[in-house]
Length: 496
Image (cartoon, rainbow, N blue to C red):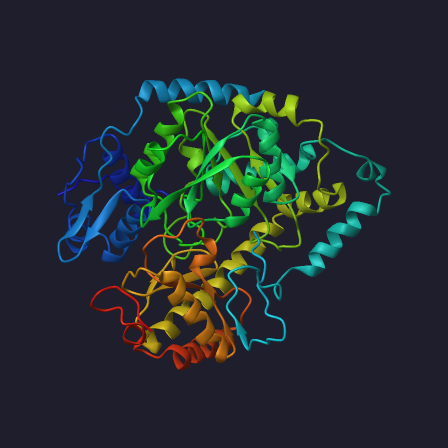
């Protein structure tokens, strides 16, 4: 039985103490790969804590890929063997970096002439609760003193006050370690990817998640990069497949994969970092597009926070957390690329208005952003729970994936088939006849493969009543015998 020191006087929750202790024991090899952990009940009795406390600790370890659950057997430690860097090397690299630090949306595919009763769009946010009053007040305060400086060009990487506010936010919420010199502010993630193409002014090969964010793929191809699709499973990008191709960039969404919703396992993250460290010009582009909304356990730490080599380029945005129309994104460059950025792309002016930068900076500094975010988490959690209950009550034979975070879930049929794209199109058409719009997973594939037919169902824009009504209409459209309709049970082949 594990002996875990618990400090009941600490402000740190007990479940977090348990989680951190087990995580570190796994990382340093004290708990070996394949070891079976005590049951929740057994460990709770041993530590004299509630079973829910142990369950929360195990849940976080499970989410981050340190352990896996085997049906009717329990929890086992995942394989992390030979993936961790020597501690002395890690400390040396971090010391060097810290020393220097001190000095999508998707387009709506509207059908002309078609009006949908319910649109389960995976993009967009709920704007009903946006703090318009506070926003107007901040804009007025920014202009009340005839601040002429706001009408000048400003710093190319973004105003220092905003970069400092972003630096604090990223460190506190995502564990990202950086200096303000590493942060670049721009109008949207698309612009950031274009800036990167200036930094890497030679032709690059990008290993990209398949399925994944198609807009990024389009941008990479537009600047002459080769894009190689890399398959994704329930542990994230298949790093062994990435290692089998010639690529010097990897584009990933490790904390919440888009669009499938999986979390990259701890072992995959370490293999990905190890892959990047093997070549001088290899880098990882981490798109952390909606890290703010997680419904179970703690937020998953950013990959950049676990990178000792300076190989992760971090991309973030406020589009999901505030509003899509606020086209503000930020990029955190590794120190090695800062000088390269200044020489190759530093002459570009910031694409975000200085007035907007000032308003957003004050929105962050004065705590309005944190309060708004906490409010929206509760609202989205409520909508999420309504959606999950409606799906459960419908008894439709879908497996729900990606339900632990984000603003959409994926409905997946239980059987793989040879033509998933066709099945998805049929599901979309059947839903359309009931006035409901859903989104096929095939829209996000760069290269089709045998897989489970799946559709995306977003909930951010809808009211709770609309969510319930939408699932009722989908049940009418599809029924509970979807597998029989497509003849998927026995062979995995599709006949309709």
